[in-house]
Length: 427
Ligand code: GDP
Image 1 (cartoon, helix red, strand yellow):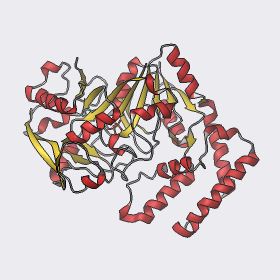
Image 2: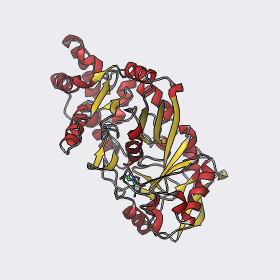
Image 3: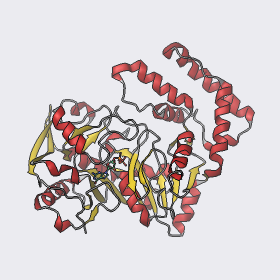
Image 4: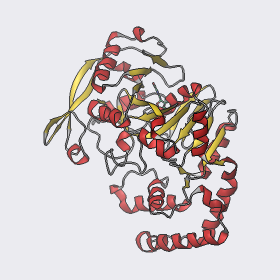
């Protein structure tokens, strides 16, 4: 059976923790989209780790970690992450990389940096990991698939020549930067070939066989619904779909295999980078207070170190987030962080130029939207360490149930701390 763990919000919901936890009962964990542009922070018996490319199941030595075809594969980062975890005592994980995954090249990263530099203050808030240039090339059909590393030198060089012709127009005329060199790109590919070959396989066929033999597969999403290029806050989105449905494509499995979708939803909101964020806390002191208390992550992006923008729980955005994911259950995270508040605002609707709306609208309507808040009483205590739902303070349960009723998806897990064991299961 296949389950997906995906983000219902802007990303950083704590998917890494939930995946690491659920990986205990899984056989295979698959990354199906995105690249090294977002990170998962995981705290377990081995320590604290920020992973960008490796699936969050790598700490469970009975699991296989899979990089699917939908991922933007950054080989140097993958290799350094493998070395980084094994050097800290984690047993060498079993890793498979799809032969159909495409590789992030060093020129993608350069182009990303140059474009951000060119746009200055009007940038898209890229993490400069090369993700947008990578996916642009993939769909312009000039990307490199891992399987192409076995092509003969002449055909690889012909493709490189074509790429350099196109990219160097930009390098010269738009960015005024040094030109790409064909030999360097060839050498880069050969270096990648040597590094990645031990891991490469036909992932789709591997997963098909695994499912036939009854294995449990977890799909691990990156970012969240609101960063999806179609359904998110376009254009401040990422370049690959963040939806569970895309798991079928990015892993190469039939869509009907995905039986369970766990939408990870934060008990308040946060976002890294620019874009519409109606329930954002605009008072800097108030935001900093929440950011500071925001778990062990300190609310600074795991990849960029940028302070996250903080906000109150946003029901229109989160319900939409769950609906688009096709959530069958919700894992409600970082609830412990809210224990300091006397009362907690929850955004229940938006006031827009077209009136009050409770359904998440398109970006143009979101631009001038104002939050409509309802205030719920806080519980004013530390809920970490509690393992039974009934033992949570009454106001805390009321907060969960208020949100659950409006999300219209059962909250089956409540996360009250960053560790694996900090979880309350609900029936
Ligand atoms: P991801 O990208 O969705 O995996 O999320 P991140 O790893 O970027 O951010 C989640 C952060 O919150 C990490 O630092 C986690 O350790 C932390 N975290 C996850 N769940 C909880 C929780 O329930 N309480 C607290 N305090 N921190 C949590």
